[in-house]
Structures are given as C-alpha cells and as structure tokens.
Amino acid sequence: MVGDSAAGRTGVNRLSRFARVRDSRRSDKLPSPAEARSGHVRWRDIVITAYGPTILIAIGQGAILPLVALSARALGASVGTAAFIVALIGIGQLVGDLPAGALAARIGEKRALITACALDAVALMGAFLAQSVVLLAIAITVTGIAGAVFSLARQAYLTEAIPIPTRARALSTLGGTFRVGLFIGPFIAAVIVTRWSIGAAYGFAAAMSLAAAALTAFLPDISTSHPTAGSPDARRHRSVISVLLEHRRVLLTLGLGILIISAARATRQSIVPLWAQSIGLSAATTSVIFGISAGVDMLLFYPGGAIMDRFGRVYVAVPSMIVLGLGFLLLPLTSGATTVGLVAALMGLGNGISSGVILTLGADAAPSQDRAQFLGGWRVCSDLGNAAGPLVVSAVSALATLAAAAVTMGLLTWAGSAWLIKWVPVYAPGRRPQQRREAREP
Image (cartoon, rainbow, N blue to C red; front, side, top):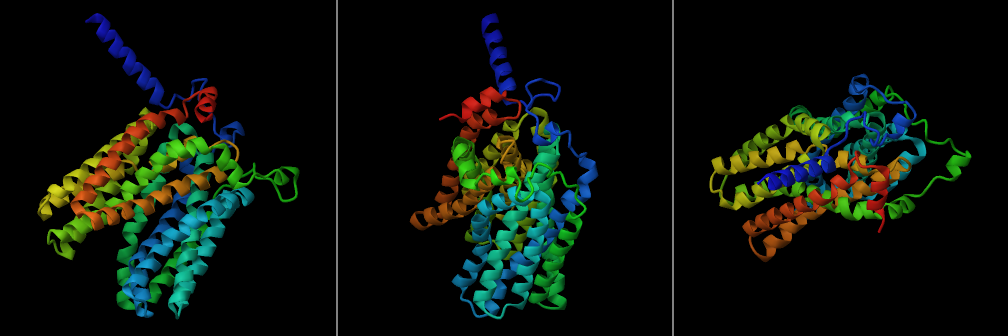
C-alpha cells in the first residue's frame, strides 16, 4: 500500500515536471530573444497598440464575411462560384503563410503589420469598386494574403515582446480580441447595408484597416535584431524552406496536433448549422444557438491563457480537444433546439478555453533565430487544418450520413488529444535546451 502510494506520487510529480511551465526564477527556463537583449515591453504598455489593430481588422473582416457571397451573386456569379469566392479568403491565407514569414523576417514585425493593413485596405477598396466577378475574386484573394501577413506578424511580435510567464495570457487575449471583433462586425455591417449598400461595407472595412495601420505606427519597435539591407547579417538571411527543413520534426509532430485542433474548430462552425437544419430547426433558431455558443466562446479566452501560464499548455490543449470531441459525438443524439443548444454551448466551452493555444504552442516551439520563417510553416499547419476539417465532413456525409461525419470528427479529435499529450510537453518552454535538441533530432 505504501509502495503503491509512493509510486503514484512519483508518477504525478513526473507529469507535473514534464508539463508545467517553469517558474521564471528557475535556471532551466528558456529566455526569449527579447529577454536576452533586455528588451521586453510591459504588457500593459502595449495593450492598445498591440490589440487595438487586431480588433479593428477583425471588425472589418466580420463586416464583409457575410457579404462576400452576396456581392458575387450581385455581379452574376452562380451559387457554386460565389461559394468558391468565399473560400478564396482561406486560400489566400494559405498561399500567403510562407511569404509572410519571409517578409516579417526581412523587414520586421512592425513594418510587416503596417504593410499588411495597407494591402488589406487596397484590396477591400478593390472589392468595393469591382464590376466583375474576376476582379472581386482577385480582391478577396489579396485580402486573405494580407490577413496571413498580419496574423503572422502580430504573433511574432507578441512572442518576442512578452516574457514567457505571461505569454499564454497575452496570446490568448490576442485570439480573444479577434473573436470579439468578428462578433461585432456583422452587426455594424447590417446597419451600413440597410442605410447604404453592400459596397459601403467594404469601404468601412478598408477604413478599419487604415485605422489599424495608423495605430500600429505607435507600437514600440522591438525588431532590433532584424538586419538592415546590405549588411553582412542580411546577406546571411535564411530562406523559409531551409528553416522549415531544419525544424521539420517539430512541424511533423506538434504541427500535426495543431492541424487536428484547427480541423476540429473549423468543423464545429459548419457541422452545427448543418445538423440543426437536418433536424428541422429554422434559420432564426440556428442563429440564436450559434450566437449563444459564440458568447460562451468569447468569455473564456483569458482563463484559458491563465491556466496555460500557471499549469502548462497541455492542461488546456488536451481538455479542450476532449470537450470538442465529446460535442461531436453527442451532436447526433440531439433532436431539438434545447439539446442542440446545449451541445453547441459545450463545444463553445471547449473552443473558448483553447483560444490562443495554437499561437502559444507556436511561440514555444519557435526557434530564437528565424522565428518568423518558422511561424510561416506553423500557420500552414493551422490553415491546412481549417481546410481539412470541413472537407472530412463533406466526404463522410457524401459516403454515409451527417451523423457519421460528426462521429468521425469526434474520434479524430480524441485521437488528436492523445497525440497532444505526447508532444505538447516536449516543446514546453520549461524544457532544458539539451532536451529540446534531442526531441528535434530524427
């Protein structure tokens, strides 16, 4: 009995040491590049300039997302073509991920953020002025590319600016502010469209992007490590591909877990409305259900970050996947608005608590040097998951039923949680450098 108790305590202690982010006073804590240069910025000093542009960009995106398909239809596109133009936002992000990493590495995160905001404003004005489906498609694609640059640069900036003990809270707040903006945007768009036109919503979104660029200009520039053009360091600048090849083990292990997280999140957004429609719920009821789920989602981003900072990333990444998987498995058992609403709220809980987990894990796994290039590959893993999840639902539904697709996603999500249990602690910031090097070796 005593031996069993001691063995149990030993196992718990090992797991705790394995998964916990170490206290900043411990000698084996890995410093961030900014710490090494004593260049950390206090979190409260950059709240407005770091998160304000994100909210503005998200409000603009939220305003146009429901209107892209309607704009395409107004220009004469078929339903299928209109759906494809909506998908071009995601395709643009996927195409732009790796070039975004190269750009941020070349010019620094702050300049990349301003460039992305300006490019987004130009693309949105192009959508406002578009008189053909082709021009609208090009503008929407460029918007996706600009979004890839903005998302990567903001992640790289906060990763370098914020010390490790508060990193998860900072990045979870970043993810949360983006969700708040996406929630607000459609309501503003509804007022604009009612009073003026659909095109005016694109003009509003462009104004939000320009305002974000102006606010970003006041962001403290911590990119002192980026070499100037023509310097010896600039000539030694590494390509994105070479960085990804060096860190391919991270991307093939932890990156696969990120892909599954993204797939589960993206599937949640599509399968809940589809299931509600299949059991006969009205569009209005479905909207209310989705709004409740989104509300639960938005309330939990900061607690999730606090848990990751206090106990470790694995204590959020794994439970959130278990909850999401449970939601998928329970969804086929629902038959009315109440039960669907409860399952949707449960899935909102799982999704909300994990806000920022992909950003945080990427920041933890990223090398001190060549961080932006690495994060470009990291975002490819995430965006591939965003595309793959709905495709799995589509394929399984075509071969079997929507219920079978939900069960399939539930099982895949639970398998992903098991994968995360193994690999999240390996790249935790509390691991010694030698241990991290051994984990990266083939």
